[in-house]
Image 1 (cartoon, rainbow, N blue to C red):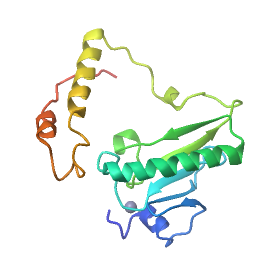
Image 2: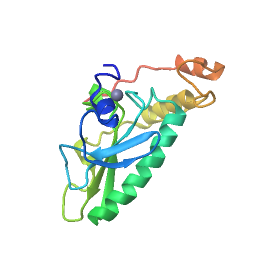
Image 3: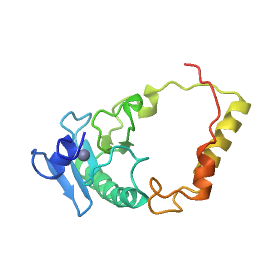
Image 4: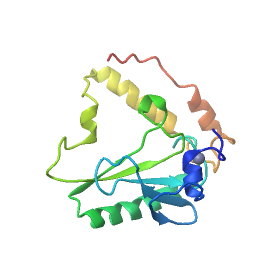
Length: 172
Ligand SMILES: [Zn+2]
């Protein structure tokens, strides 16, 4: 979906009304229309980008600043005991609107489960699998961020790291 049709782009442009809570030159934040708790806010970049892996480091840095501001404000406004910050990338992860967004959800001691992680079951992996996945992630992290536009200009390290995928089977 392009920027013209994208729901969140249209909200950021003011073409679709929203309950705006924060705006700066790069970011926009508004109440989720399906709140999980009072003060459930979505923080988005004004620029159309779908996932955090597609966004540039500059885009994410600007968004992180807005995210922190909104988190502080939402917690104060709701007198929450805690905050969950949640962000899904891709259909498999439960992303519904294809425009990068962070959920800021005020949390209260009286509610349960205590953590959103509780929706995913804890899985057991042997030492060898844990070591392998740790070294693969570490290997793939090398070189990322050394160019301003990692999607268009790749460093040698990035290109080298790209091929490093190993078949690891996770049983569910
Ligand atoms: Zn968009």
